[in-house]
Length: 209
Image 1 (cartoon, rainbow, N blue to C red):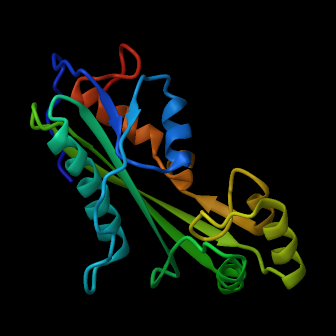
Image 2 (image 1 turned 45 degrees about the vertical axis):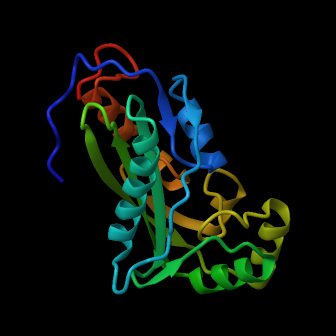
């Protein structure tokens, strides 16, 4: 989408992460910015015939906008990730061991696409931007023994796709292709740094929007 003009002189009281994800919180902490966390209450159900990347963008923006409406002076970050196998079936968080086994069996020898959207919104200044970062994860051919060993070792039941690439999930993978490694974990920091700079809250002085 078109990028808005930078807002170099904008002053914000607060930076808010509109997400209850501990992974996104840990990623945002890497930027050493002070922020608070507010979990928005929105309906995350997909619309009829909604493509995965559009779903991720809509939900990321909805999360940020919902919090920004209550905190107009703040700069609010929203994010969402949608995963699919071979670009068709949406893959959610498994929640249970049995569902994780089924996900990994389905992913065996195939590619899983992750669309991670990040939105930055401020009600007072009118700043609103959203970017989606794609990542393709290719899985090895997975035996039942490997699947069970991995799931018992790492229990990734809160991760879409049932594999933590930053941990032992790497043992299941052939490759990861994408422009931002942090996007796969849940928050694309490379794009976020640019977006914050354009909004007038650079992570470090001198960042080019």
